[in-house]
Figure 1: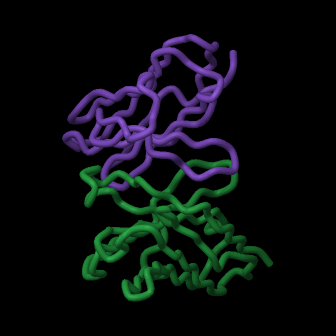
Figure 2: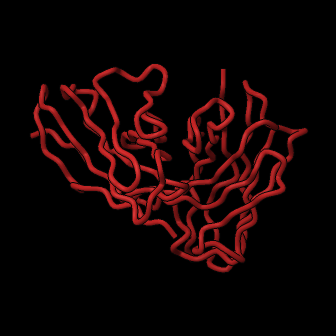
Figure 3: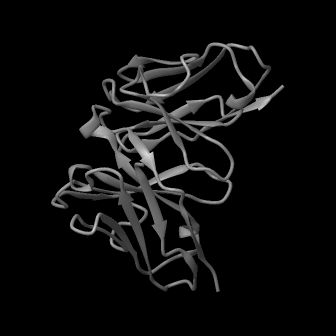
Length: 122
Length: 103
């Protein structure tokens, strides 16, 4: 079964750090571009970061640039998001999502994890 | 940066209705437009990719059209399972969402 499973969320104080992980299974992880998307409580979806299949190309939303770092370990079939200098406005469910380009779906996100909640509060 | 604008933000409809949601891009994105359905507490689900291609397993009552800057998602006959929030996405940017409610 094709699956993405996030972990690492939790409660953190403003200014703190957290590292999210996304474990992939059921597909050739190294062939796919990956993304992080977040959703604040009661709000819409916000794209956060992109990483190419090899890890050589990375993009960030302006709202997290300089504070968040995306990475991947293709040998471990895992995607990561290192979040530093966290703010209250970073409170959200964080999803990892696979880009379906390898399957002919262009830049659409065809597989999503279940999400992990990050709460930034004192 | 490209902005994606969805309308309406909320839509009240009845079972059996034909429903249309519009998404506008601030600049041309060719056909690089996807539509997602999200239910409360769940991850989004891909419905349509490349503006008009139906994702595997998605009912044929869902269809997408458009190119350039104007796109639509149509549900030909709304079913009880379709009450949800729908998002468009163009080149990584999501629209604000359209909540489809029971009338």
